[in-house]
Amino acid sequence: MNIDGEQLKKILLEQNYVSPDDIKKAEKIAKQKKLSITDHLISEGLITKTLLGQAIAESFKVPYCNFQATQLPQTEIQKIPENIARKYRIALFKEDEKTVTLASDKPDEQKIVTAVGQLFPNKKIIIAYTLPEYIDATFIQYRKPLETRFSKIIGKQESVAPEIIDEIMEDALAYQASDIHFEPQEKDVLIRFRIDGILQEAGHIPKQYGENIVNRIKVLAQLRIDEHFAAQDGSIHHKHNDKAIDLRVSIVPTIHGEKVVIRILTQYIQSFHMSDLGLSPQDEALLENAYKKPFGMILSTGPTGSGKSTTLYSVLKLLNHQGVNISTIEDPVEYRIGGVNHIQVNQQTDLTFSKGLRAIVRQDPDIILVGEIRDQETSEIAVNAALTGHLLLSTFHANDAATAIPRLLNMGIEPFLLASTLHIIIAQRLVRRICPGCRYSVATPRSEIEKILPNAQAYFPEETVTLYKGKGCKACSSMAYKGRVAIFEVIPIAKEMQELILKNPSRQEIWDLAVQQGARSLFEDGILKVKSGLTTLEEVLRVAPPS
Image (cartoon, rainbow, N blue to C red; front, side, top):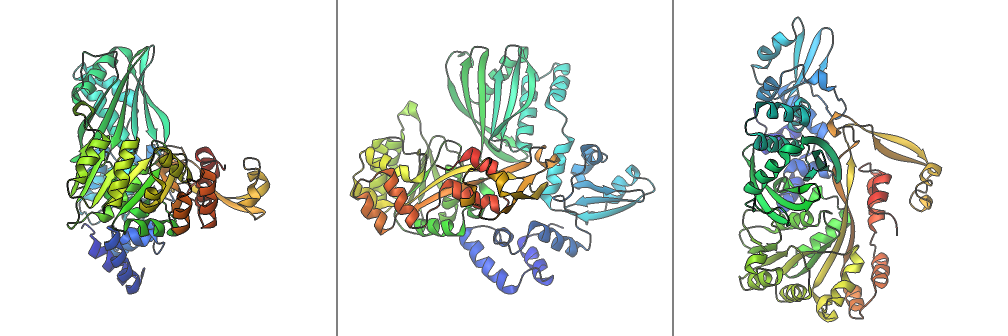
């Protein structure tokens, strides 16, 4: 039995987890925002994942297993062989002297008890329900260390490079890494994954296989294998479990050999929604007001890797329907959405941002996404496009939202043009989320907080503050964090701000007015997420300390 949206709605109503009015409202908003009803109910706090799991378990008439609250050691999980666990989608949840509780997202599968009965002789087997994501997370526990698998591959002496690359890709995707680093050292090649923004060592490859692995990657990325002393960039279309994963490849020469970095793209954008970004209701309303206008400019600012493109693509997903023509010009095309015309910048054919954007304007577009405004020519075309009836979204490198306006004016944009086209500026950073599987609260005296935040009283007026941390568990590889959430700084361009732009203001003048109108800094938005238990104060201070 597979649970679809209609069945979930029926289950939640029949068991009184939500009211008919909640469902009616959720259906309307979910349709507007192009997300599932359950995603909306969870984002609004009307239900939790635990309540959702309990409701489905009740419909199956079985217990519910909450893997967020319980983490078994790897040795316990591996009591069930991997092939059986994957075939029947089961995981060991609890075992005592008399009973064994197995969790599955398909608890009505009749063959489960027969398949595992001999593994637990003389014990009663209880089949329970858990959410599919928790079953998938347990499968990671079956993976042996990369170096163990490398040794096995090398021992066979067959297809060493392709098999090693496949194993690395499998682990990178399983651990949701954003980047894979192949770093040549004096005696070996170090493999590191960037997970939730932090580089983590994954394994080592003997030096003698390094060149073959680099050559294999070059072939896949259609790069020159006879070039070893110049930087090269390429891309790979990788198939994984019937899904296409786009990889961006960068190779540069170092003193110990060629270093490769693979950026993993398009993993989750199809299932990513505006509600996942982490915008406060106030800031989400400001962004919604901006993208519902028929023309004008929306800017997302921040350093590389701060989630700017993801924010803009979540807007594009909402705007994408049959009645509009959407075109993008990017370098590279990071996410692919059906119905959107994606154009890749190509320096070899002289297809630059400015020339591509000029061509798009002649293609009868309604909505345009420019991957990045880098120069005066691109900024001028973008502003003119926004002025002549197009909604234009773009990223822009600036440290904060207020700095973007002086930088655009310094590029040569006329103040009256910028004031009349710019709708909103969003600055953002990414902070790591506390792992939900091992999160716990800590009553912390403010005097302790003041050791790392001298003016703590301005943000935490209470003498004792409830903060949250992660203990570290198998689900988060003992990191205490799992996943990331954005912190934002949002400046809407209302009438007073338009008048200020006409005066060619400084960054400080813009920010002072924005604060008067209710804007929060990146740090202040981070503090709200600390108080709600999404992240830690240390994370916010690491990424966006107070100015």
